[in-house]
Image (cartoon, rainbow, N blue to C red; front, side, top):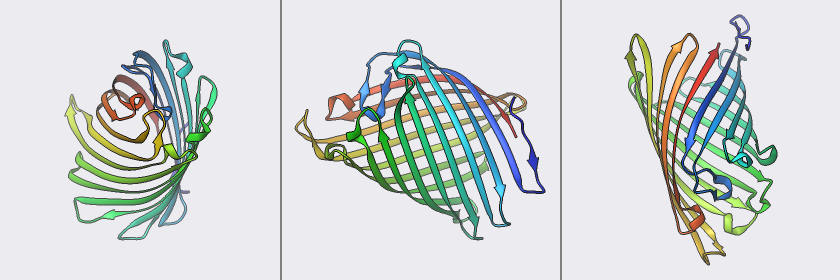
Length: 289
């Protein structure tokens, strides 16, 4: 069992979480490679997260976290995925606004073999516009390497903006977001510009003297590729819709039971990238802090 402590004198806080789950996927796929099986499968999931928050001064703090996740399929063992994420966030409270720098490194494997390396750096600024409105803006630079296909290695620049409306504080609020991304890949046919929209609604209900958390979300992405895709002899164009519902309920001290379901609709003039997908699953987690 992970240890936990809080050292208020030094301004240090440590937390840990582990989770076990299972899910059904109607169309097992690898999004980064435009690879779809058009077949369903069941998967078992496991994840763990460690986080350390350190107060440096009265106005600055540093957050460090490590996340591990593993997905094992029943039949598609070749797509068993293991992911390691290391992150750091240095933030400063400037009074009216908060600002900071977030850094992430991700390493993913498929069936025990190198698959993806991803670096991400993002300076950001955030603050309340009024009592109920909160905004956050960020610039994001990323660099990814895909072991199975070096032509897809890419660097990208993005700008993103999120707006929150707290209808009843954290008990009920909306999140709306927009992101523009420009990705430059090794092969011209994988270069694209994308517009991303998202809309989330979070509501907490009191059920049997505990709080049930519900989240509804919709995400849309419009990708406009600038290079000619040889198999269709034209520029590729993708539109992607994703819907999801997520329910979380505390079942014992530090424990949470989660149920989720999602539907994705990918439309594209590139046949391999045009498909739909249903995912439903459950997860039981334990948290120490």
